[in-house]
Image (cartoon, rainbow over all chains, first blue to last red; front, side, top):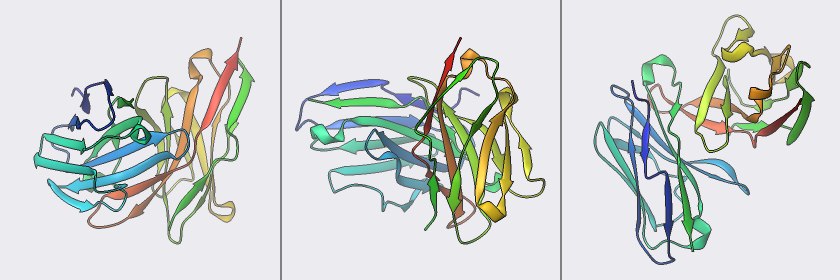
Length: 114
Length: 116
């Protein structure tokens, strides 16, 4: 299996622009997680899905952030409008729930908002 | 709510020396515990996990960890460190939530530097 695939690997944008991060989970996995990693706050869980349905979005920082999972093989995390404080590495992870949730991480998207 | 403490932000060891990275957790029930490693510019890779049973668990790359309930600890060890082990190490605790997946709470990480 190719693992969790994230795109793009790097994104540089200007403040106020819309940013869309993409994730393809491991085939057959039924849980998908979005994390944000910063020096100040470490790794934070933003939102997670089960069978394409958002279960817990309590970690989403504000309304500028939204996430969707239109099907089992694709998810997006959108920031609109972006701000410099959104600069971070965003990770996607997936797991197969019944195997006690070992989460497999993608390589991440490094976002820089200027 | 669960929490994880990794008291060492940065550790430097010589190649060939032994290593122990500390992890303390707080959780009201039986925890699921994990160690992940992150190399520069990479995602997190699972080193090992503890769900139940034998409290000494073996992982990849020669790592092991011991779950000590009385101390709320899950320290990571390796008898002989290789230069390629230089990376950031994260301890995480999992909590059962809806269904069978768990939300992972991560520690702040320990950056390991290996000197030759």
